[in-house]
Image (cartoon, rainbow, N blue to C red; front, top):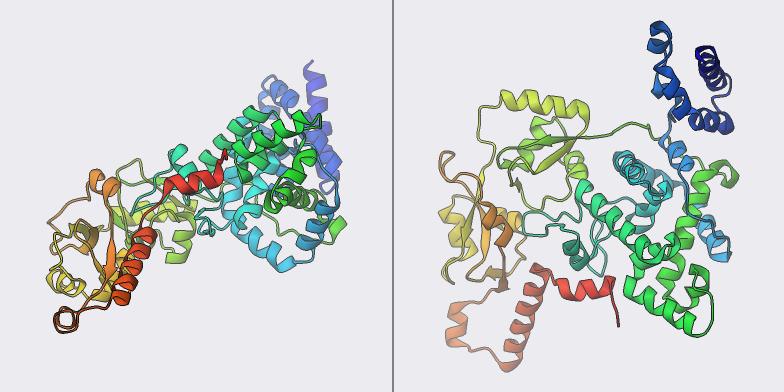
Amino acid sequence: MQTFTRNIVSLAALLLVLCPAVSQANDLAIASLPAVTAGASRLPPAAAAAFKVDDFKEADLWGRIRTGYAIPDINNELVAKHVNWYASRPDYIARTSARASRYLFHVVTELEKRGMPTELALLPIIESAFNPQALSSANAAGMWQFVPGTGKDFNLKQNLFKDERRGVLASTDAALSYLQKLYGMFGDWQLALAAYNWGEGNVQKAIKKNQSLGKPTDFESLAELMPAETRNYVPKLQAVKNIIANPAQYNVSLPPISNEAYFTAVDKTSDIDLTVAAQLAEMSIEEFKALNPQFNRPVITGNEQTKILLPKENAEKFSANLANWGQALSSWTTHKISGARESISSLASRFRTTPEVLRQANNIPPSSQLKAGSTILVPKLSTSANGDIADQVVDNAVVSFEAERSNRRAASHPLTRTQKLKARAAEAVAVIKSRVSGKADKQARNSDG
């Protein structure tokens, strides 16, 4: 038995050495891996030491994704149309691949842990081109494009300080959980994908309609009942899947993505300014935000449960620099507006800063003032005063605005009815923009009507 096992190992290794570019040889080695690794423990110590599972894994992450394809293919005119669209845009593929290189290993690993088809890792290409800062007209955010209501359904925190719909770890976990739930409902990945885009209620209604007419209920049979976006959604994923499976066939050059983790999670134990965190990690602000896009304010709040993602070498620099820092980690605290007398100008003077700094830190629109009850970030007046921002404040803080008014003009020249209506409209728009309306956005994702 030992001789037989050694022969299998030698054969697999020989195939990899002689045929590294032939996918069939790699597939054979990978397919044999469970049996080989089981036998490796019975090899002589010297042979076992030379044997490494990593020798059999895909060097390129695209290859790893190919081996896990499991969703049935569709082949129609829409697929061909989208294949041509992507294949004719090498710059788009290059930019999207560059962004994906930060996140794709994590997504594929999580899919494999759950036993899910690995082509689902390509879904953010369709949703957001792997841009975690993407925001749609329907207020869907992040690379998985969660609307606020569905994000809340999957415990993605959304407050003034962070929006976990943009967070790499949290949004990926939520998206895969949602897709699993949808697959459990429909027993079909194509219908699950349609429901991810259109809402499970709408897909259920379409199924019932076709059933009542004695028609099939697969994706292509239901497509005519779907809006154009959903009708094209699965064909788009199929098109990307086809290109990744055989880029040479479509004259596409895929930028290689290393099949190893791009980032690691670092614990934080106290508030830290975003600029300080980037400085300690020896990264640019842009690079830091690319891995930590969920943080909305210049200070990262939270205890050790709040993770910072950093490339491995930067994580090591972060830890070393943090140990030798010796300065305050955060320069921000919060202040609650008590009344109309607290203008941006007066607050800037009180907290020894400028109106521009306060507006930028709190996303306060120009020509607007804060309403009573609003909670904003302000500079700490003393490094020893005001500790970390309390979790209760983080979870419940709101900011409301209204248009700035001149008291002197209001006294001598009362507003006309038209001016009053415009002021009220401006105030309403500002309030709506500053708050998240979960109910309406949830209906956009999961409509039953």
